[in-house]
Image 1: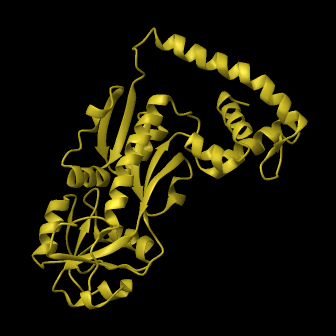
Image 2: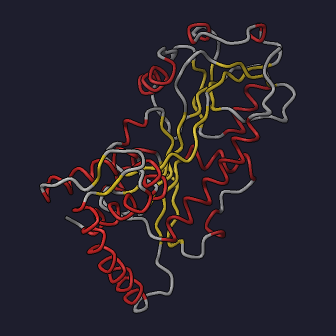
Image 3: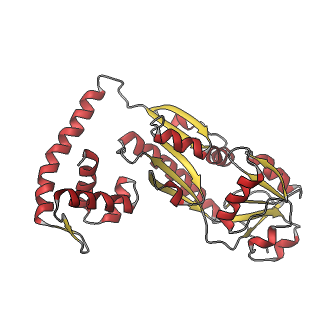
Length: 306
């Protein structure tokens, strides 16, 4: 039994619903369910009746009474001890290069640190490196992009937003006569690849196969981490690109075509399984969530090919 597990239990007890508790804790529903199950196995008794809403058993009500003063004292100790350090708890954050580029393109700046007084470190890296930094406790939070949430099961994570993927192409491309495209239809057209780090065609092929269930790598003209260079390649008709929705909305030379895939690009906040989010960390996540909600709203106005 840990303080973190007891915090999860208390939140479930108050919400009377696993999903609502998970949303409040900024973790996945399976994570909360697993914690409750672990506590029940440790105590060898049920804590909740699986009804709607959840009903605590006698053991659950007793545990809630014992937990409340314990957690209040724990939070009081944390606040008191922080006064011996800085007034604000430092926050070390890493952000995926892809997400950095998106923010820079949409908002003209990636200087997020100005919005967060408690931010002690902000770095922009590839997803694999960010994940390792979280596991090694070199970062408190990371904001990453992934095609498959299953890849993040070793972390606590919160899905900030999800985007559909589209083909961005020049307005005169003959593919604009289609309302949607089968991924196989793009295997012979020139493509540019937007990646968070220079990768070889094998790596890119694996990523495309996850996203589209189809790999097209021989026709990739170049790889880039710069959305401006990719926009230029598309608007001049040099190549097309598979990207998330909501980009290049004001460029009259570029059209988008939906791709026939049920996969999305997910932007996640991730942190260690044994870490309970602090108020400044929650505030940072909420700042990003608002940014991406605005981005998703703008994406609704994307102009599709006629």
